Amino acid sequence: MGILSNLTEEIKDAMRAKDSLRLESLRAIKSAVLLAQTASGAGKELNDEETIKLLQRLVKQRKESASIFKEQGRPDLASPEEAQAEIIAAFLPAQLSEEEVSKIVSEIIVKTGAEGMKDMGKVMGLASKELAGKAEGKLIADLVKQHLTS
Image (cartoon, rainbow, N blue to C red; front, side):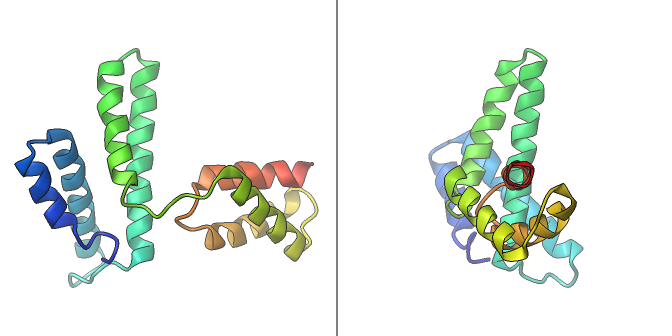
């Protein structure tokens, strides 16, 4: 739990500062981690890779909720979701820029000899593994499609 090693301290600080939004976000992280630990059996600690996937899922959920609220004309409900997504994303490693991801995808396509959309699965598998935690899956998929169709 290296990424979340200071989570308890962060929760205490948010309580002292009476920052309810941050506190709610941090408690959501702690809850998700505890659920993941108990689901995987005998209280085993999550490794960094599992923790990153968990945090990415939490951020994605918040962003999807915010977009749904915006579509329904409820910015009052969308803004807290977006703020929580930012707080949770702060625990993730730095994300690569679109240009950096594009360069890595190009290298993978050259390395695998992929020619067209029929090889998308092969490229996505390698790209997802190499870029795990460093870029969103949707961005990776969009760039792979773009490179394979051009």
